[in-house]
Amino acid sequence: MSLPIEELTPRQIVAELDRYIVGQNAAKKAVAVALRNRFRRQQLPASERDEILPKNILMIGPTGVGKTEIARRLAQLARAPFIKVEATKFTEVGYVGRDVESMVRDLAAVAVRLVERESMEAVRAEAMTRVYDRLADLLDEDRPRARKRNATPAGALHSRDIVAKAMEIFGQKVEDGYPEEPEVEAAAHDEEGERAGKVRRRRLRRDLEAGKLDSRMVEIEVEEAQNPFVQVFTPQGMEEMGLDSGQIGSPFGSRRSTRRATIAEAKEVLFNEEARKMIDRTAMQREAVNRAEQTGIIFLDELDKVAGKDGGSGPDVSREGVQRDLLPIIEGSTVASKFGPVRTDHILFIAAGAFHMAKPSDLIPELQGRLPIRVELESLTEEDFRKILREPKNALTKQYQTLLKTEGVTLTFSDDSLDEIAKIAAEVNAKTENIGARRLHTVMEKLLEEVLFEAPEVAEKELHIDAEMVRARLASLAANVDLSRYIL
Image 1 (tube, helix red, strand yellow):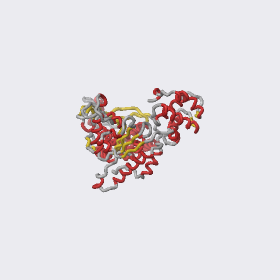
Image 2 (spheres, one colour):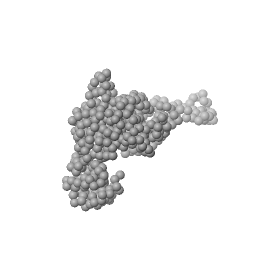
Image 3 (tube, one colour):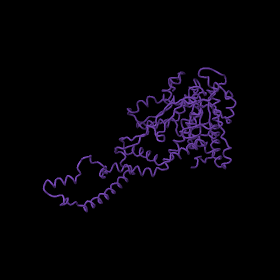
Image 4 (cartoon, rainbow, N blue to C red):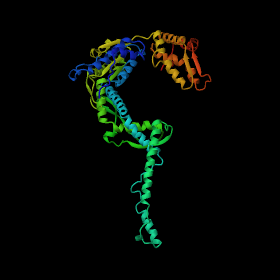
């Protein structure tokens, strides 16, 4: 299976990122080049491919300016395995906690789920055929049920024995023969029933495929996998290990259970069950490990929190140790996972941090060398806030409009109201802690607090937000410099 590297030029990649993220052109260009280099590397002969290593990136900028969003959208664009981890959750080898290798194992698990979904979609047509067959059997109430073998209890008389006994009681000899059975009529009846059954099944299949029966309730028997998780102590610390009972044959095996569901729900449940039966799990896991090694992206956030060089005590004791443990992972090593060994040589690492209290130069020199590309993200301005409220595909205003539409409320914003929201958010960031675009969440939630609360009961189903309403509802917010109670 070929790797799903998008054949997009760096300019096209930046254009795709612009649909969701405002500004930060330098960071977008850096990640676009990194993604394009992966495509270029795949075009090389196998003998030269291994020599081309990814150029890891260090993003420097305050919170809320789009560092995580850039990495996440890039991974979605390339359909690549992606995880986000915080450097502060790791501890130096020898201390109880998560070791840095766990992020590679997590990436492999994400890759397995990604490849499994793709493999299931590849067999969707055949799997749905089986699903419709199972549902047609359940809905065909006139279908003759198969008799169970050995259903007659031990010691019980067969029906022919009962007839013989009755004949002896009334003086008729058994040798005279049993009453004649209409074998020809029975055969004709069975053939007619079979034809009628085929007609019923075709009709049911047609209705199921058209979705006409989606609201009907049905009882389905599904397999519930029992995959318990246990915490174990490893030489690197405490890890959570899953027991794959389907492969090791543990007592936690899968079991069958019956549940009631609508036909629409049953289709999805049965599809997942049938599709998983059809895919080769060994080949799928092998492909997932390869995908993680060749196209995986690990976003390492809060790197500045472990940037202290000086030896310390308490929670800071393992800061430099975490940096030393990160070195072999980022440089290239092999990590054991339950899906097989994973090489990290070609995994792209994107590290990020605000670096308010520390500087990138506070990292140990070896780690600095593993992050050769550095981009600084700019703080967001009032003009950026205006664009964020209007332009992105997932703009906050569009999100609130979609949410309230479920209650039948039509929400609209005037241009001057969006300008006022952006102005207040910028002012609050300047007066207090600058949390970037996350401040817009605070402002929008305060502005629409009453609307969201009363939406199910309000009689007026159309609401227009203008600048005057924004100033009236956010006056106390703009005047109050202590916003801690509004920030999650």
